[in-house]
Length: 206
DNA sequence: ACATGGATGCTT
DNA sequence: AGCATCCATGTC
Image 1 (cartoon, helix red, strand yellow):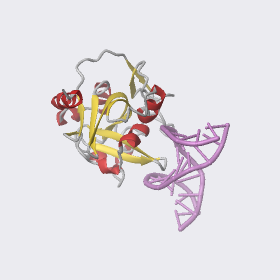
Image 2: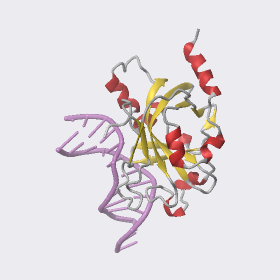
Image 3: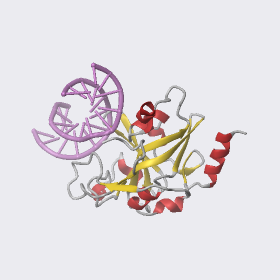
Image 4: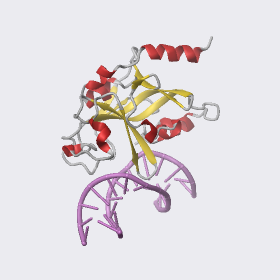
């Protein structure tokens, strides 16, 4: 009967648990490609397929907010045990959504850069692919579209209201390139920690 | 092609 | 305390 509800229940069963997020960020970044991000927010449920991610490796990664290990008001969430959400405000307008990984005091994270919307985005007024892409194809776009902000900082990514669901039928190739927007980095600038699903239209455009 | 925007971090 | 810097995005 209600296909959407059924699907959400199915996804609930495939929820990634906390242990999954205790590994290194590059590993998590690759493994969650093709998985589903489920966010329950303002009494709505949003589902998006994760199509583009970046790994940030922590204190030795000079592109990371936790580089050098200095703890600040902004980055302290990164030092939590993996499995919580790290959001930060950027460019005076936007929010970026990350999943903290690895063990406590190893401040790694995965940035979710783009999603393919599957539910919860108003598709009535956005039938065209180009319109839909403007809503979820980009690290600051999808967060804006579903109301991600500081309210998600430090929240669990293994809870009923925010989780990653395993996709057991992955048939795609993964591209592995250098990360975006980190020219200020030197040592880690060219590391291939930016992953995306090849040929997926919702990968943010270069 | 250009304007927007605020937190951050560095300099004073 | 001041300010240059950051660039994804929206709007042109």
